[in-house]
Image 1 (cartoon, helix red, strand yellow):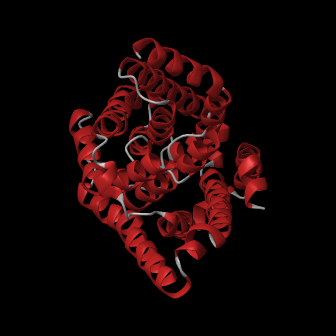
Image 2 (cartoon, rainbow, N blue to C red; image 1 turned 30 degrees about the vertical axis):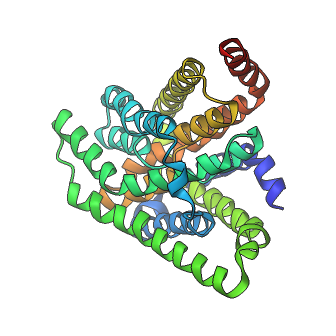
Length: 329
């Protein structure tokens, strides 16, 4: 089941969106009168999406990875500088400030657990990808509020940064601590093989099913706005595709210039472009409101499509990096 859901990740994501739009539009009155309940549902499903990923994260052995300072520096540049800067430029063009802030949040959050799956399929370095995922999670705790505060200053908006900090604590810190505690208990009682292999498919299924439910609730809650203003949907998809392609092309160019291996490049590329929109949606909902979560609800439509398209280009990527490294050798 885990392999099936992962294989058809795009299909099920699109189905969640396609079902949510007419249902949310038809039951618009219910959506409006039960806004608080739906906001709680967003946070609930977001935590269900994040918590299993935190159990799977291996923090042991990270010290060895830190000697690979080049991909780590490049990763921080792509994730916490390039993507946010581009989103800063594009966000004001949405017309709705709340949607713009949500778009910025969607490009400031840490790596999605799906990135590790993409790296695995593409034959990249899982060790480096896992290390980058952990590093991004820890760094995001202070960096995300800083980025949002920076955007509020640039856009002359009043954004409750304290609420952003609180939401980051609930959505990132607590699931991380709970997940690592659960991992510790399971490793001590059942062994590392049980956590890393036996239970992993079930955790992956739980993560993906929770993500589909989260996308459904997010889209259904904003279906009225999406139906009346489809241009916003198109803008989010187009803008996010532009950011992803910019990061992929730049990372490929830098990997070529620095003679990086194919494995390290794929780990860096997928962790840089695959952002955890569950975290973004929950932060936006808790700190700002449902409209701010619109962009994180739409981004999962385009994010896996481009990630899988890049996987299909693996032969060309491997050939390009191999030719460069062979020439230098």
